[in-house]
Image (cartoon, rainbow, N blue to C red):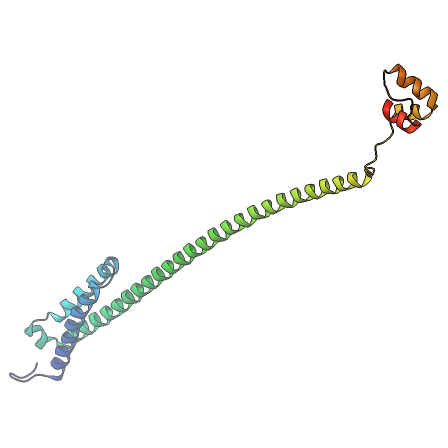
Length: 204
């Protein structure tokens, strides 16, 4: 036991230990406010332990300074480890959330790109169908034009001269006398002085 009015080395160590434990408890309480509720709740036990270790009567401090020191140091170490784990867990959780948000954004961007590409592909497919239909129509038009040209080339040329009919051929075989007889029978007049060609034209 220390003498009256003096403080032993063990007491000074105990006072330092309980001061550190008390300060750590206050710091941990502030840290817990910034942590998720579940993690903050997990620190309460260690904060209370550090506070209890720091709440030592003067009598106990004088009588059992080494025990006070051990309890305070143990509570401090446990609290520091618990705080470190909680902070690491919170950081990991925040990192995972950030990664999840980035993944969601990337997925949304990918979906938007896929939708745009699908729309573009649909438009290209539609344009291709229109082009195919236009090509088919053009081919049909070209075929019809070829047939029309072939028919035109196969048709006999029009010389402008009247083609002889069967009647004309029959009249050509007749004599002038026979032609005049036909003209008379047909009631024509002025045929007596016409030539054979004129008679044929008259009777045609």
